[in-house]
Length: 292
Image (cartoon, rainbow, N blue to C red):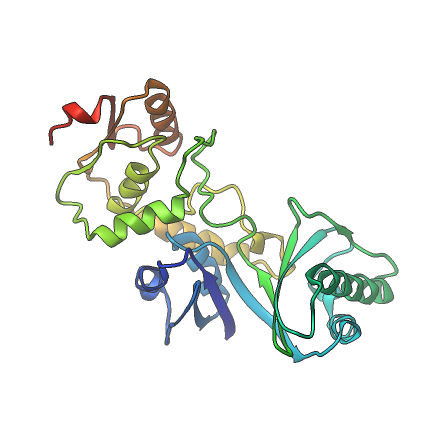
């Protein structure tokens, strides 16, 4: 079983736990900014697909005690990164440091990077490249005091990127937060749902995904785990198949309106892109004239 950590927006930890509880066998521990649990590779795939309020699902690969920058290098160069990162792949590292021992986060990241590429080069004769924007393999490092923990980012891009937004509205709410607000509201999908200031339609679209039991990750182009050496295509296909069979065909009563015509046009385009064009009624209207 793997040690997993699902990050989420602050304040949505309890909602995040409740949202994925049915997919987890075992205890779920709430921490500030995320939840901890254990699971196998099927759990990794499933949580990435189904989590509505999660941001990154991280899988812990190693941990150690370190007190200086050289020890960070030694720690990373001692791990079998050649089994995780192919020489043809790119990778990137994100570090979060809360320690009096390390005042320079960038130097921590550099030492970790050097340890990884040197270890791979010693085994393969070639070193992989760095790609900070869209790496094949994404690594997270957390240093607290003299403790360092290393995680593989199983999600890739943050999970709030569902794949239905072609254009980002200047005042848009991220999808994970929008889903969290809907879940916090306690809305029962047997009743009508109204958003009279819907902007680019994020909240109504997330409400529709919830009402129809559509996994929020169903329309994403890719997840980080798909780049792994041990990615199991058969397990992933079976999870996707089961999720599609569980979608509710009944149309919910969901309404979104906004005073700006371009916002409504963007909302309709986003909803149609994932087959929800007939499940949400968008209209141009001033909130002053709103009537349920």
